[in-house]
Amino acid sequence: MIENGEALALQTEGISKHFGAVRAVDELSLSIPRRGTTSIVGPNGSGKSTLVNLLSGVLPLDGGIVIIDGVGLRVVHAYETPDHGLTRTFQEVRLFDQITVWDNIMVVLTERKLFPSLFERVRPANRRKAQAILESVGMWEKRDSLAMELSYGQRKLLEIGRAMAMDVQTYLFDEPFAGLFPQMLERVKDIMKQMRADGYTIVFVSHNMDIVRELSDRIIVLDSGTLLAAGDVEPVLGSPEVIEAYLGA
Ligand SMILES: Nc1ncnc2c1ncn2[C@@H]1O[C@H](COP(=O)(O)OP(=O)(O)OP(=O)(O)O)[C@@H](O)[C@H]1O
Ligand SMILES: [Mg+2]
Picture 1 (tube, rainbow, N blue to C red):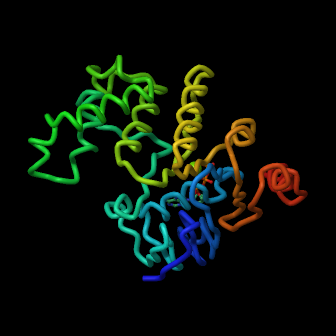
Picture 2 (picture 1 turned 45 degrees about the horizontal axis):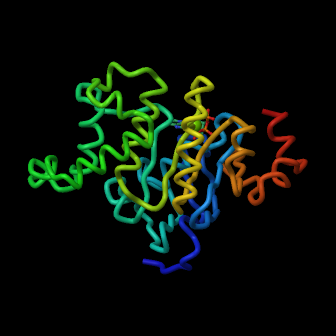
């Protein structure tokens, strides 16, 4: 274990993931401070989702270290990341389709305690929490619908709600805005702004530069699995190498 400064939510030291000859993430070192919103951008195939998968333990590291909230890990187990204070959503939404919206949240609130979960479900504290989460993602009215009955946008909202139910410090959102109609897009933006105001660390991947500009305190630009630039939004997006990476993509 490697102890690190309090100020960083996430850090990587030389992490890599190769798929055959493709260096999806290549000896990448970066850091993401606690609190505020950091966006991850880059051309298609630049390694954004792979990075999120490595940070959240969905893919094993080929090399390097992930440091979550000061704890250095050479092996990141997905099931352990909430204990380190981190959770994520997927570019392709993942829900339990056959159960209700309400149960999709309840499962997260109680699933980490297997047998007690039978009793935990009826606890008023959990019921209040589930209601608060569903209200904050605008899905309270839909609580009795099956997840499979939801629209694409509603599925995205529910997935964000499920992430919130993990009750961690750091949230990674892989393309939370992709494919959303304007009204839904505004709602997801509002949720992320509220989470930021509540003191959480928000990291999101997006191709929408207007949203990146509006929401981000900092930006990380990937290109071919490496760090092209990082820092304040406007200087980074205006830098010649970033412009070239996008135009060349
Ligand atoms: N499971 C996999 N097997 C083989 N190659 C993969 C796999 N996952 C990703 N890749 C490759 O790794 C590279 C990075 O992919 P990744 O999905 O991380 O990019 P991305 O930046 O998220 O792209 P997008 O903007 O399209 O979502 C791409 O060349 C991709 O084809
Ligand atoms: Mg991706």
